[in-house]
Image 1 (cartoon, rainbow, N blue to C red):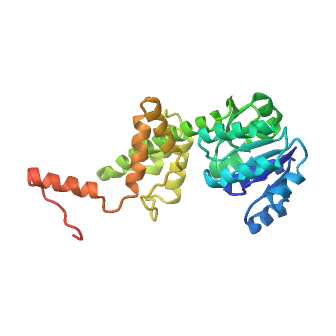
Image 2 (image 1 turned 180 degrees about the horizontal axis):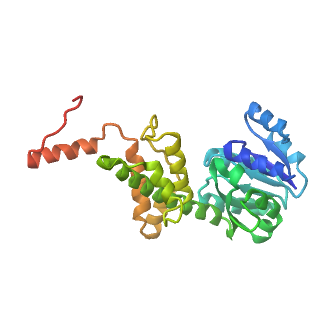
Image 3 (image 1 turned 120 degrees about the horizontal axis):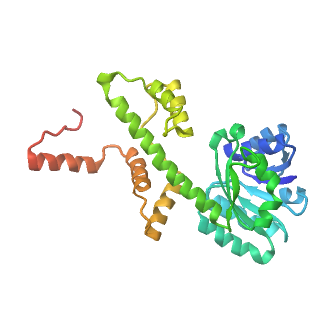
Length: 303
């Protein structure tokens, strides 16, 4: 099966590797000539431009986008929309907001170009373990691309599926990431409590290993905690600074828009924001209030 791929970052590149390993012909394009050349040596057919990529694909074409959300994806969709022909498929596998998918699909429809949105989970482990794929779009187009989805998934009958019309793939992935925020925060707080009980001398790696079997909290995230503790028992050298991909923010906004409470996810996002504060003014206000009403000692800067 011919597949076009725009974007050869960590996830896009590993998706290309899985496809090529399974015998698919992949025509790829990346802005970095060095990155493209790396994959050409692995068997990918390199394209010099988007125009070249479209010209090299057999019809009906299928072009995957694995680009950052926002302008890079928007610009590429616009350019490809002018290059592709009726019956071709454009699929966005990045972290796009679902409302953008719905708008793009509507814009492409008059030209007969099909649009799919694919929420993709698996990170750097996808090459080995396979990817979890949440797909939105017409069922007949999803069926047409089934060989490509099956190659990426952990198994032909597991870890992938069409979840509804255009927009649902990235909507489901958005909620998935919101849940992930809550799970990660809970594990982090639990291990912080264990680490804080100094007089017990707890072995955090041992506890994580015990929980990995039989426990109701066993999970891949717990496995990753155990792996991190094995590599660095005290997590030395890791700054307490946590980024967010943006999908947690979208999930919280969806909670507000739909009046469906999601307090754990919202607080998990707030904790990520808090991790980035140095010299928090809010904490200084709290300390000052305690000193004002109760005469509690305050710690002065630099002491």
